[in-house]
Length: 192
Image 1 (tube, rainbow, N blue to C red):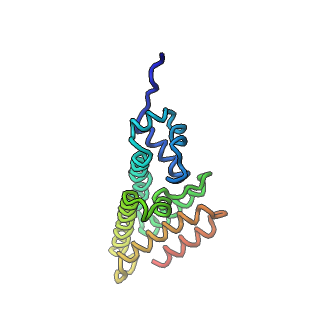
Image 2 (cartoon, one colour):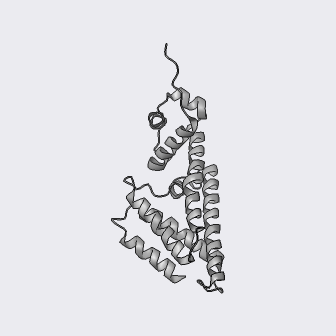
Image 3 (tube, rainbow, N blue to C red):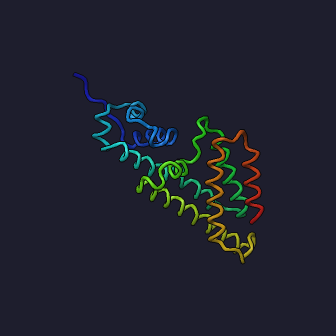
């Protein structure tokens, strides 16, 4: 009798994240997860408890890797508007280069599960709050540097920028190319 197949739980969460990101929560079957991770169904449940528990870990992995990357880009050095434009263009280019056009997992989860899954809704809300706070801080930095008018409401602009990112990440899923998305980015940054 052979030894049971060993697996790395962190790698399994990463693989599950890719499946949930591509298919969504409801469309992902336990068999999809088993196939992606390469373990038996019993091992999947023994390691993670349930599909939903694994989904929660996968969404947290997304937050810790993908979502924080946006904030790190905003915190780089250089003129505020240049950083903002560069970050938004990077998101669009990354999403357009993805053959599955998955967009943003957090945005997808909000569209699919908001109001029906309290845990996922709260986690996405916190991700959005953190991103909005990063935008507000960037706007305040731009105001101190004289790039953005000091009389403008930094909180409102932060909310507007978050809304712009959410819209861009949804639009990219059906966009034929970057033109419309680039117009949105340029109009948003130029309006500041």
